[in-house]
Image (cartoon, rainbow, N blue to C red; front, side):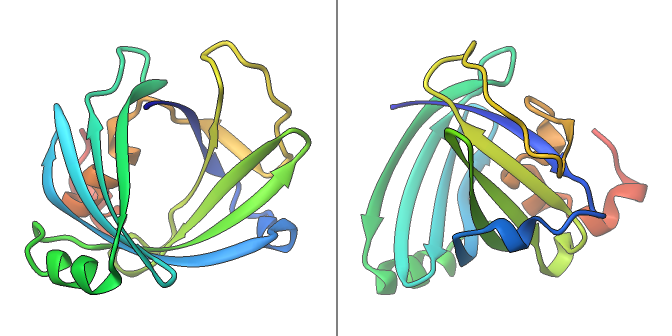
Length: 161
């Protein structure tokens, strides 16, 4: 249940979307967005999920994650109880060599933000990087979805962590 991932900005000049084998709409909110633990409700396509994540390690590479699928009607009801600031995005899954990258194109208040994540088996695992990957932002709290729900990308010129 330990999640290990690296996060990157996506170069906005690229067309990573053409490489995707799957595209899914995601809507999510937070019942709790405290740094020590987040409780997230997500609708991904036609599925609902409840996810609990622990605090990130000091290097930002790993943290506890527990996730269960729930009925979509339950997810819709729970979204109504969430803290203000729903996250909306399109997720593109892209196979690149031996890994799958999840590239997120944010909508709504976070429109214009493009992020990619790759999950790893261990912290030191090497992986090939597609040419559309930009700066690594692993561990940078302002790129966490829970942060984006409170301080959307469109407001960043007014607030920086």
